Image (cartoon, rainbow, N blue to C red):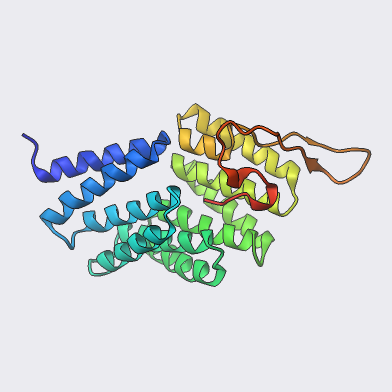
Length: 252
C-alpha cells in the first residue's frame, strides 16, 4: 500500500496532467485532495504551500477569483515561514500574476520584482521567466508597452532556452494578447501562430485552446493602405466569451 506522502505526490502529478490537458475541474479536485494529504503530514510544509499556490491558479481558471486570491495569500503565508526557495518565489510570482490579471499594475510590479529578485538569488530561471511575464504583461497593456514587450521577450527567451513548455506557451499568449491591445496586429498574428504551433507539437491542449484553436489569430487584411484590422468569426465552437472581442482578450 502506498504511504500518505507518495499518494499525495501522485495526486499532485495527476492534477498537473489534468491541467495541461484542459480538464481543469479534475485538476482542482486532485490538487485539493493532495493538499488534504500534505496537511495531514505537516501543515507548515513546503508541499502544503505548493498545493495552495496551485489551487490559487486553478481557481482562477475556473472563474473563482476570491478563491484564487485566498489560496494565493495562504501559499505566501505558509512558505514565508520556511527557508526561501523555489516554492516561495513561485508563490510571490503567483500573487503578482493575480494582480496583473485584475489590472492592479503597481501591485503586479511590487510582487513581480520581489519574485524576480528572489529567483535571481536562487538561480531559478523558471520563476524568473514567470515573474518577468507578469511584469511585462502589466507594462505592455498599461503604462509602458515598449518595456513590456522587452520583458515578455526576455521571459520567452528564458523559457525556450530552458525548455519550460508551459512558460513558453504563457509568454506567447500574453505577448500576443498585448500586441493586439496595442493594435500591432501583424506581430500579434505571427506570435500567436507560433504559440499555437508550439503547443500543438507538445500536446499542451489547454494553452492551445486558450490561444485559439477555435478561432484566432484572426485573418488580418490590409485594404488599400488603410489600417490593418482583424475579422472575427461569428461562431466560436466553445471558445470562452471573453475571447470574442479584441478589446477584451484576457491575459494569463
